[in-house]
Image 1 (cartoon, rainbow, N blue to C red):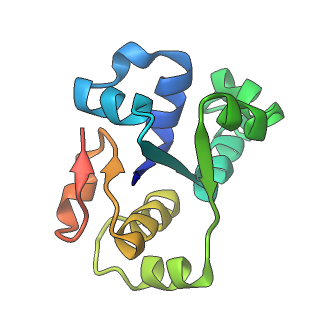
Image 2: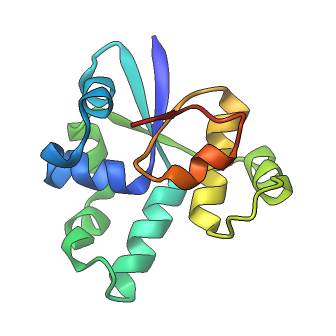
Length: 130
């Protein structure tokens, strides 16, 4: 079984508006032979943005995050100390803490990241699917 990590917006689109996903992204997310991982940082990012009013449409996820992941056949990826160390050590100008930890998790595990965000392309060691 292969694994992929999804960026926060990919999780949101997969659950609310799958037509926003590209064919390669949608194929990976829906492939039963692919373990689709969701970083704990995604839960943190969604709940933060719901709280400050930047993502009110995702309030349903905050209220029942684990159940929504299970129904979508997604698996939570906890943040480990080693992920945090890699995140803080990345020689990458991008400062977003959510993106940095998600990138570090993908890099540490040698798995692709599904994301529309091209900022990840600046990390030569990270494979981005979109």
